Length: 130
Image (cartoon, rainbow, N blue to C red; front, side, top):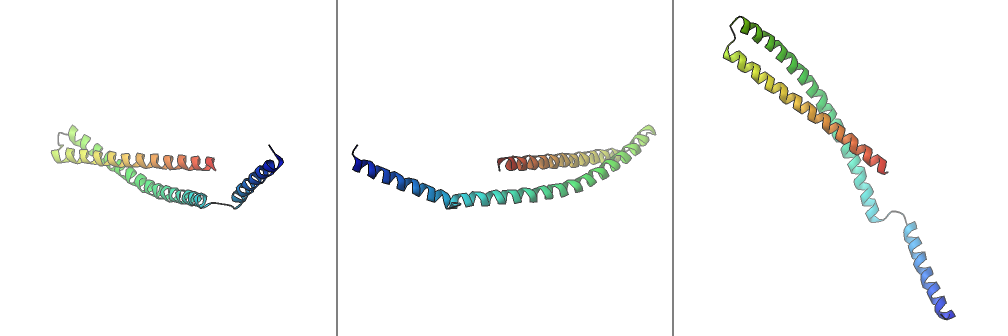
């Protein structure tokens, strides 16, 4: 390789290196800004959903406690009526409907608990990536 050719190659390589360094030093690119914006929005959305789920869980817990109390009271009453042979079909139907409602509230309570655990798990994953 001649000296002239070597100098041209060195100049071209120098320009390429300078351009690469200049681009790297410019800061965030448009794509990187968009990624960071979306990450921030995701974090905000997770926080909002977590608070909403926690509030709904609190209300559902109160409903579940009331349903359990109502079911226990009704069960005692129906058992007493069964022993006295006074239990009616309406009483038994009401007991079954109360049990179904309690089970539905319990299912909702469990689903909200799983949702909260899932959101927290995802938040930890995002934090560990950063």
